[in-house]
Image 1: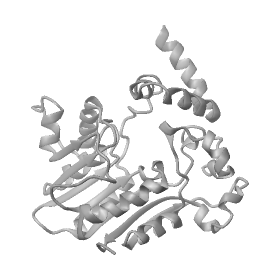
Image 2: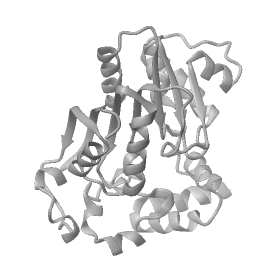
Image 3: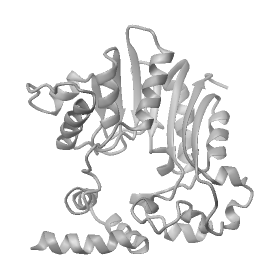
Image 4: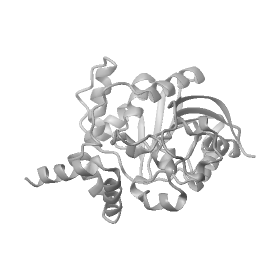
Length: 296
Protein backbone atom coordinates (compact mmCIF):
# COMPACT_ATOMS: atom_id res chain seq x y z
CA UNK A 1 0.00 0.00 0.00
CA UNK A 2 2.81 2.40 0.89
CA UNK A 3 4.51 1.73 -2.47
CA UNK A 4 1.28 2.66 -4.29
CA UNK A 5 1.01 5.88 -2.30
CA UNK A 6 4.62 6.75 -3.13
CA UNK A 7 4.00 6.00 -6.82
CA UNK A 8 0.97 8.31 -6.80
CA UNK A 9 3.03 11.09 -5.20
CA UNK A 10 5.83 10.45 -7.69
CA UNK A 11 3.41 10.81 -10.63
CA UNK A 12 2.43 14.26 -9.36
CA UNK A 13 6.07 15.23 -8.88
CA UNK A 14 7.01 14.00 -12.37
CA UNK A 15 4.23 16.03 -13.98
CA UNK A 16 5.34 19.36 -12.46
CA UNK A 17 8.98 20.30 -12.93
CA UNK A 18 9.00 22.88 -10.12
CA UNK A 19 7.62 20.36 -7.64
CA UNK A 20 10.26 17.96 -8.95
CA UNK A 21 12.97 20.54 -8.22
CA UNK A 22 11.65 20.93 -4.70
CA UNK A 23 11.76 17.14 -4.28
CA UNK A 24 15.38 17.07 -5.46
CA UNK A 25 16.30 19.83 -2.98
CA UNK A 26 14.66 17.87 -0.15
CA UNK A 27 16.39 14.65 -1.19
CA UNK A 28 19.74 16.45 -1.42
CA UNK A 29 19.70 16.74 2.37
CA UNK A 30 19.23 12.97 2.73
CA UNK A 31 21.50 9.99 1.90
CA UNK A 32 22.05 9.56 -1.84
CA UNK A 33 20.79 5.97 -1.72
CA UNK A 34 17.30 7.30 -1.02
CA UNK A 35 17.22 9.15 -4.37
CA UNK A 36 18.35 6.00 -6.15
CA UNK A 37 15.60 4.01 -4.36
CA UNK A 38 12.94 6.40 -5.64
CA UNK A 39 14.36 6.38 -9.19
CA UNK A 40 14.74 2.61 -9.30
CA UNK A 41 11.63 1.43 -7.45
CA UNK A 42 9.08 4.26 -7.60
CA UNK A 43 9.54 6.42 -10.73
CA UNK A 44 11.42 3.61 -12.59
CA UNK A 45 13.64 6.29 -14.19
CA UNK A 46 16.78 4.25 -13.52
CA UNK A 47 15.52 0.90 -14.72
CA UNK A 48 14.09 1.49 -18.19
CA UNK A 49 14.72 -1.18 -20.80
CA UNK A 50 17.20 -0.59 -23.60
CA UNK A 51 14.80 -0.38 -26.52
CA UNK A 52 17.40 0.34 -29.20
CA UNK A 53 21.11 0.89 -29.79
CA UNK A 54 22.00 4.47 -28.88
CA UNK A 55 23.30 6.82 -31.62
CA UNK A 56 26.14 7.93 -29.34
CA UNK A 57 27.31 4.33 -28.92
CA UNK A 58 27.42 3.88 -32.68
CA UNK A 59 29.36 7.16 -33.10
CA UNK A 60 31.95 6.06 -30.52
CA UNK A 61 32.25 2.55 -31.94
CA UNK A 62 32.73 3.90 -35.47
CA UNK A 63 35.48 6.29 -34.34
CA UNK A 64 37.22 3.51 -32.41
CA UNK A 65 37.24 1.28 -35.47
CA UNK A 66 38.42 4.11 -37.73
CA UNK A 67 41.15 5.41 -35.42
CA UNK A 68 42.76 2.32 -33.92
CA UNK A 69 44.20 -0.73 -35.65
CA UNK A 70 46.37 -1.92 -32.75
CA UNK A 71 46.06 -5.26 -30.94
CA UNK A 72 44.83 -3.49 -27.78
CA UNK A 73 42.83 -0.29 -27.26
CA UNK A 74 42.74 1.25 -23.79
CA UNK A 75 39.69 3.40 -23.05
CA UNK A 76 38.72 5.40 -19.97
CA UNK A 77 35.24 6.76 -19.34
CA UNK A 78 34.01 9.06 -16.59
CA UNK A 79 30.37 9.22 -15.53
CA UNK A 80 29.15 5.88 -16.87
CA UNK A 81 26.09 5.72 -14.62
CA UNK A 82 24.03 2.82 -13.30
CA UNK A 83 24.18 0.02 -15.86
CA UNK A 84 27.39 0.52 -17.93
CA UNK A 85 25.29 -0.07 -21.05
CA UNK A 86 27.60 1.87 -23.36
CA UNK A 87 30.67 0.02 -22.07
CA UNK A 88 28.94 -3.32 -22.53
CA UNK A 89 28.01 -2.43 -26.11
CA UNK A 90 31.57 -1.40 -26.96
CA UNK A 91 33.15 -4.49 -25.36
CA UNK A 92 30.82 -6.86 -27.18
CA UNK A 93 31.76 -5.23 -30.49
CA UNK A 94 35.52 -4.83 -29.96
CA UNK A 95 37.35 -7.81 -28.51
CA UNK A 96 40.64 -5.85 -28.33
CA UNK A 97 39.12 -3.12 -26.14
CA UNK A 98 39.99 -2.72 -22.45
CA UNK A 99 37.95 -0.19 -20.47
CA UNK A 100 38.40 1.66 -17.21
CA UNK A 101 35.22 3.27 -15.90
CA UNK A 102 35.35 5.81 -13.08
CA UNK A 103 32.63 7.65 -11.19
CA UNK A 104 32.68 10.23 -8.40
CA UNK A 105 30.43 7.90 -6.41
CA UNK A 106 29.69 4.15 -6.65
CA UNK A 107 26.64 4.35 -8.90
CA UNK A 108 26.83 1.04 -10.75
CA UNK A 109 23.99 -1.34 -9.92
CA UNK A 110 24.90 -5.03 -10.50
CA UNK A 111 21.34 -6.14 -11.33
CA UNK A 112 20.87 -3.33 -13.83
CA UNK A 113 24.28 -4.05 -15.39
CA UNK A 114 23.42 -7.74 -15.87
CA UNK A 115 20.06 -6.75 -17.36
CA UNK A 116 21.77 -4.31 -19.74
CA UNK A 117 24.18 -7.08 -20.82
CA UNK A 118 21.28 -9.40 -21.66
CA UNK A 119 19.30 -6.71 -23.51
CA UNK A 120 22.30 -5.54 -25.56
CA UNK A 121 23.22 -9.14 -26.42
CA UNK A 122 19.68 -9.56 -27.74
CA UNK A 123 19.98 -6.42 -29.87
CA UNK A 124 23.28 -7.71 -31.30
CA UNK A 125 21.94 -11.26 -31.80
CA UNK A 126 24.55 -12.61 -29.37
CA UNK A 127 23.74 -15.41 -26.95
CA UNK A 128 24.40 -14.16 -23.37
CA UNK A 129 26.74 -16.34 -21.33
CA UNK A 130 24.92 -18.21 -18.55
CA UNK A 131 28.01 -19.08 -16.49
CA UNK A 132 28.64 -15.55 -15.19
CA UNK A 133 27.92 -15.90 -11.48
CA UNK A 134 28.38 -12.33 -10.26
CA UNK A 135 29.17 -8.78 -11.36
CA UNK A 136 32.93 -9.38 -11.09
CA UNK A 137 32.65 -12.28 -13.54
CA UNK A 138 30.68 -10.11 -15.95
CA UNK A 139 33.09 -7.16 -15.80
CA UNK A 140 36.08 -9.48 -16.16
CA UNK A 141 34.53 -11.14 -19.21
CA UNK A 142 33.87 -7.71 -20.73
CA UNK A 143 37.39 -6.43 -19.85
CA UNK A 144 35.93 -3.56 -17.78
CA UNK A 145 37.52 -2.18 -14.61
CA UNK A 146 35.15 -0.12 -12.46
CA UNK A 147 36.64 2.45 -10.06
CA UNK A 148 34.47 4.48 -7.68
CA UNK A 149 34.69 6.81 -5.95
CA UNK A 150 37.25 8.47 -8.23
CA UNK A 151 37.55 12.00 -9.60
CA UNK A 152 38.66 12.33 -13.22
CA UNK A 153 40.02 15.83 -12.53
CA UNK A 154 42.69 14.42 -10.19
CA UNK A 155 42.92 10.83 -11.41
CA UNK A 156 46.49 9.56 -11.87
CA UNK A 157 46.56 6.51 -14.15
CA UNK A 158 49.04 3.66 -13.97
CA UNK A 159 49.20 3.79 -17.75
CA UNK A 160 48.09 6.29 -20.36
CA UNK A 161 44.92 5.73 -22.35
CA UNK A 162 44.27 5.89 -26.08
CA UNK A 163 40.81 7.36 -25.73
CA UNK A 164 38.56 9.00 -23.16
CA UNK A 165 34.77 9.00 -23.48
CA UNK A 166 31.98 10.81 -21.68
CA UNK A 167 28.27 10.59 -22.42
CA UNK A 168 25.55 12.79 -20.89
CA UNK A 169 28.00 13.79 -18.16
CA UNK A 170 29.66 17.09 -19.10
CA UNK A 171 26.40 19.03 -18.77
CA UNK A 172 26.19 17.99 -15.10
CA UNK A 173 29.65 19.23 -14.06
CA UNK A 174 30.39 22.85 -12.97
CA UNK A 175 32.33 24.70 -15.65
CA UNK A 176 35.29 25.40 -13.34
CA UNK A 177 35.56 21.67 -12.71
CA UNK A 178 35.40 20.99 -16.45
CA UNK A 179 38.52 23.14 -16.95
CA UNK A 180 40.37 20.96 -14.41
CA UNK A 181 39.10 17.77 -16.05
CA UNK A 182 40.25 18.75 -19.53
CA UNK A 183 43.66 19.79 -18.23
CA UNK A 184 44.11 16.45 -16.45
CA UNK A 185 42.95 14.52 -19.50
CA UNK A 186 46.05 15.81 -21.27
CA UNK A 187 48.06 13.71 -18.79
CA UNK A 188 45.71 10.73 -18.85
CA UNK A 189 45.71 10.38 -22.64
CA UNK A 190 48.63 9.53 -24.89
CA UNK A 191 49.85 12.22 -27.24
CA UNK A 192 47.30 12.48 -30.06
CA UNK A 193 44.89 10.48 -27.93
CA UNK A 194 41.18 10.92 -28.59
CA UNK A 195 38.51 12.56 -26.42
CA UNK A 196 34.90 11.88 -27.39
CA UNK A 197 32.26 14.00 -25.64
CA UNK A 198 28.55 13.31 -26.14
CA UNK A 199 26.63 16.23 -24.63
CA UNK A 200 22.95 16.97 -24.07
CA UNK A 201 22.35 20.76 -24.16
CA UNK A 202 18.65 20.59 -23.31
CA UNK A 203 16.88 21.24 -20.03
CA UNK A 204 16.69 17.77 -18.49
CA UNK A 205 13.34 18.53 -16.84
CA UNK A 206 11.86 18.69 -20.34
CA UNK A 207 12.67 14.98 -20.73
CA UNK A 208 9.80 14.06 -18.41
CA UNK A 209 7.51 17.04 -19.04
CA UNK A 210 6.48 17.29 -22.67
CA UNK A 211 4.88 20.70 -22.16
CA UNK A 212 8.23 22.17 -21.13
CA UNK A 213 10.53 23.72 -23.74
CA UNK A 214 13.87 21.99 -24.30
CA UNK A 215 15.39 25.43 -23.70
CA UNK A 216 13.36 26.26 -20.60
CA UNK A 217 16.40 26.65 -18.36
CA UNK A 218 17.70 29.48 -20.57
CA UNK A 219 14.85 31.69 -19.33
CA UNK A 220 16.61 32.34 -16.02
CA UNK A 221 19.49 34.52 -14.92
CA UNK A 222 22.26 33.11 -12.74
CA UNK A 223 20.62 34.12 -9.46
CA UNK A 224 17.27 32.57 -10.38
CA UNK A 225 18.85 29.41 -11.72
CA UNK A 226 20.73 28.78 -8.48
CA UNK A 227 17.43 28.06 -6.72
CA UNK A 228 16.13 25.98 -9.64
CA UNK A 229 19.27 23.86 -9.87
CA UNK A 230 19.55 21.35 -6.98
CA UNK A 231 23.00 19.74 -6.53
CA UNK A 232 21.73 16.18 -7.07
CA UNK A 233 20.29 17.16 -10.47
CA UNK A 234 22.84 19.81 -11.40
CA UNK A 235 22.83 21.31 -14.91
CA UNK A 236 25.54 23.78 -15.97
CA UNK A 237 23.58 25.09 -19.02
CA UNK A 238 26.75 24.99 -21.12
CA UNK A 239 26.36 25.84 -24.80
CA UNK A 240 28.16 24.15 -27.68
CA UNK A 241 30.45 27.09 -28.51
CA UNK A 242 31.52 27.35 -24.85
CA UNK A 243 32.50 23.71 -24.76
CA UNK A 244 34.55 24.00 -27.95
CA UNK A 245 36.42 26.99 -26.51
CA UNK A 246 37.13 25.10 -23.27
CA UNK A 247 38.55 22.16 -25.21
CA UNK A 248 40.72 24.49 -27.30
CA UNK A 249 41.94 26.26 -24.15
CA UNK A 250 43.06 22.89 -22.75
CA UNK A 251 44.99 22.24 -25.99
CA UNK A 252 42.60 19.76 -27.55
CA UNK A 253 42.23 20.25 -31.29
CA UNK A 254 38.76 19.76 -32.72
CA UNK A 255 38.72 16.94 -35.25
CA UNK A 256 35.02 16.57 -36.04
CA UNK A 257 31.59 16.72 -34.49
CA UNK A 258 27.95 15.99 -35.12
CA UNK A 259 25.18 18.23 -33.84
CA UNK A 260 21.42 18.01 -33.50
CA UNK A 261 19.36 21.20 -33.35
CA UNK A 262 15.77 22.29 -32.89
CA UNK A 263 14.23 24.66 -35.41
CA UNK A 264 13.13 27.65 -33.33
CA UNK A 265 13.62 29.34 -29.98
CA UNK A 266 10.23 28.94 -28.31
CA UNK A 267 10.87 30.88 -25.10
CA UNK A 268 12.14 34.29 -24.03
CA UNK A 269 15.88 33.91 -23.47
CA UNK A 270 17.50 35.47 -20.40
CA UNK A 271 19.90 38.37 -20.97
CA UNK A 272 22.54 36.07 -19.48
CA UNK A 273 22.59 34.28 -22.87
CA UNK A 274 22.15 37.35 -25.08
CA UNK A 275 25.69 37.16 -26.52
CA UNK A 276 25.19 33.68 -27.95
CA UNK A 277 24.23 33.26 -31.59
CA UNK A 278 20.77 31.85 -32.23
CA UNK A 279 22.15 28.77 -33.98
CA UNK A 280 24.27 28.07 -30.91
CA UNK A 281 21.29 28.28 -28.57
CA UNK A 282 19.32 25.93 -30.81
CA UNK A 283 21.86 23.08 -30.61
CA UNK A 284 20.33 20.32 -28.52
CA UNK A 285 23.02 17.65 -28.72
CA UNK A 286 26.58 17.15 -29.89
CA UNK A 287 29.08 14.36 -30.43
CA UNK A 288 32.57 15.88 -30.39
CA UNK A 289 35.84 14.19 -31.29
CA UNK A 290 38.95 16.13 -30.27
CA UNK A 291 42.66 15.27 -30.20
CA UNK A 292 45.04 15.66 -27.28
CA UNK A 293 47.89 17.93 -28.38
CA UNK A 294 49.72 17.59 -25.06
CA UNK A 295 51.07 20.27 -22.73
CA UNK A 296 50.84 23.94 -23.68
